[in-house]
Length: 160
Image 1 (cartoon, rainbow, N blue to C red):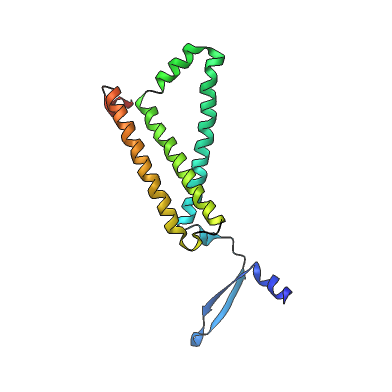
Image 2: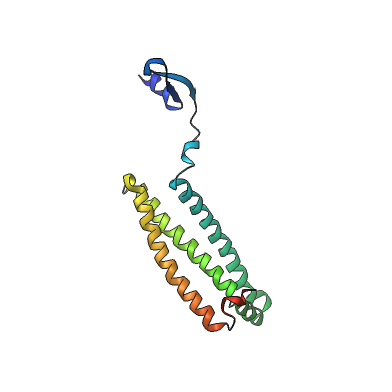
């Protein structure tokens, strides 16, 4: 019994309907997961990693910017902060908010799956978490556009 089980775990058998509608095995091949790269789970996995990379890059950039005060002086830090007031950087802050929201809420989803909650309804859990992310991102987007419109005479035209 144990040997028979070991022999079937690593392989999948592809079957087709032969003459008379009888299923017959074609070949035994190892499943490398290629079929899993088509759905929502694949995109959740990829975007989770992309958001993580964005957050790590932001962390290093943040440390670099804050350290300019210590290395180059307070006036350099103040001029750097004035640069970040540019509408392009305000829009990049929206990318940061997206990364934080997506990574955090998708992390909650993964944690729920690890605890055994919502496994059979993982798509509904994913879309619920993303719904919260969209609502929060919309709130921050409105704040960002109001800030750009109020502080820059050119509005979004001042991006260049």
